[in-house]
Length: 102
Image 1: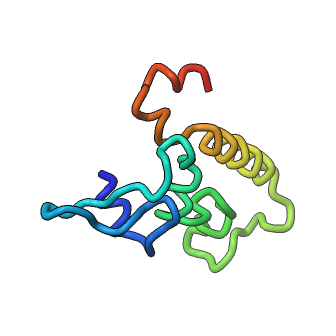
Image 2: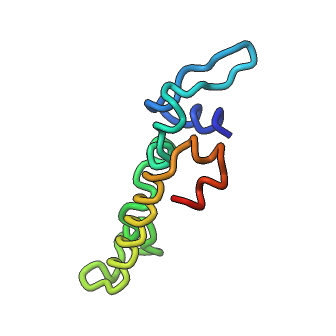
């Protein structure tokens, strides 16, 4: 999984160059110092940003852009998800029970 992640992006700060005869990648800093937010930003920057611009249907822009009742909900949800991803690091993934405490 991490090999695919690292090869699909310009080498992020958390991912070092390939190593070993069988390829793969190494972390360039300790796993507990690499947040999932960093990983998501390297793979798909702004994945939760501006949802309205991504789902316009057949139009060039959302027809509700001037008076949207749901945009604050999407914005708040994205912030909560990003905050959570900042608190979880790659070291946490190695110890799944630790995620229950985050």
